[in-house]
Length: 198
Image 1 (cartoon, helix red, strand yellow):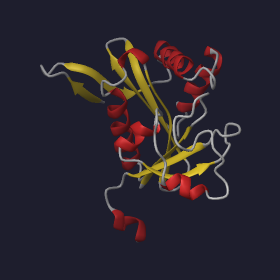
Image 2 (cartoon, rainbow, N blue to C red):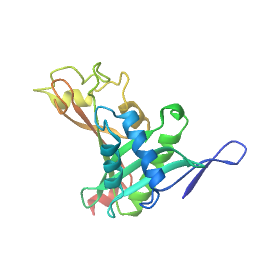
Image 3 (cartoon, one colour):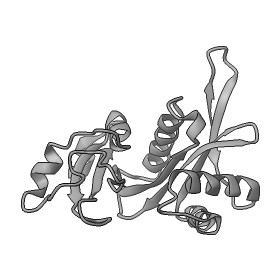
Image 4 (cartoon, helix red, strand yellow):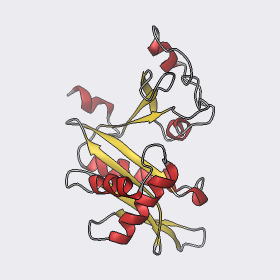
């Protein structure tokens, strides 16, 4: 468990593991998914299933709590021998831009590093009606990598991940429909770039 203090030293929120027996917290975490991603998880039943999947024994699921409130949560999935996928990250709308997402990702990086990860990666769709990046709403073929290398953020979560040290490592054109790509991002979490060469 990690504690994020207020300026007076009192805990502002704590980050700890979401437990399978904490049904109230699971429901609150599911409600955050419905609120943030209604196009992906439009019902509590689907959202609760997503939370339960994040609680599988081989995954990591962390929540930010302030007393009985769930302010946000983040999950990670082992996909390769030395790389984990960040999935998902959600912060309650009324407390965004208060450092909760940043603290959750930092705590997750520590956890996956402890599991032997060298890389943390994610996909973030540009699938809203108005494109949030320079890759949204345009034809990315035949030069997809050029679009990835020159990606500009207009109003999209990719901006948060860039500030957290992630890099754009690719694009999947039309992943969520015509002109709606998935932006692939990754970050080294090992702290030792020579480790990957040994």
